[in-house]
Image (cartoon, rainbow, N blue to C red):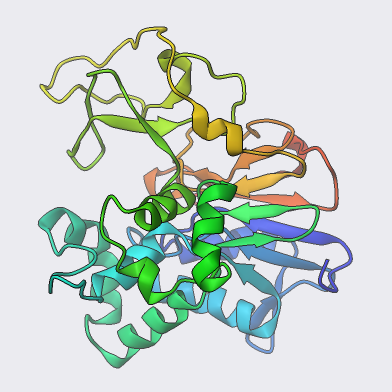
Length: 315
């Protein structure tokens, strides 16, 4: 376990809530030593999405970066870190890899305002984000931001061994490389047989996130992850979805030999729970007045709810 005899504390999406992160670290026994949060026997693993939304953008990334550079933490890239990189990179057509639309700017505004767009600090943070691995295989534990999907990972690893490369950043939408990145950092999606819904920022969605962590899915109604309280794109009630068979071929490539921990999926509830004995989402909507959650892994083959630790976003 990399010299940390008691294991890893895997922390979900922080999204700029530095004060909540510090409370979670303190709850798990981390203390500031020489300016860095450390634990004598354990190591943090951040699942990505440190940035955007919350009031403590720079402090959040500074805490995580100092821990990574001191060896008291590891981190994988989230889709928000990737989006931050793509916001600054031009594609072959001369446009931005992350289009500078009003919706995309709104999602990224908190970080840009805090860091100062195009500043030296901004460039420095982008360089640091770009060197983060997109997944970590820690032997008995795997960590990825959204989905541990070997075919997608293999496509990207052929270029950068799990690291981001210019070819991956600039891959055109619809290409195999682009789709591979989407699956790993955002999770697989499937069509909803003509059903649509508006997401939390008002974008009309014709596809929905596939519940890849559930090997028992067999129809549209139980295969997709739909946020609570959404409407259809005409403003009416959404669903219910039909119990019609769906193509879940992506599941054929998924393996669960060891536990997989991930974030991204904006879970809600008063008490976090694992998805299955081998899979657990650690994103419990800290940016939506939810909780910041960690899983304290100590070598077990099967995950348990007892090893989840949470702090409320509101003190």
